[in-house]
Length: 141
Image 1 (tube, rainbow, N blue to C red):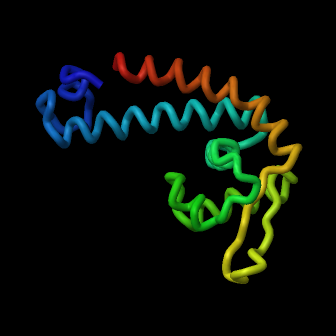
Image 2: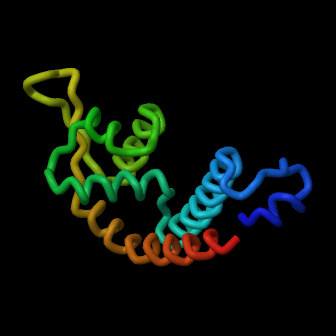
């Protein structure tokens, strides 16, 4: 968002370009625009939400088979409860499996299934295309 649009938009506080609060608001606006576009496209084209895609994306990036939930929680922007809900939805749809760590019964592992990999591979081009398009578009606003 430019300085001009921040000054002329109703309900927006006037902030100078480079102002910390103005920069923060620009970041939030850009994040919201991109997240909404990704959520809609992923849901419409692939039947998964952004949180589910991001979880699959992290599992693929980790390339480790079993990914400890505690480690995944540190590596993703989701809260612990939001991550648990996303993993539960993915598990219900057969896209991931959860298992208990044999050495530490408190530990839970998440593993990508073949079906999860198929859904991820189909959704990846959509995610990257929408991310690129909305990133560029949001930067110009």
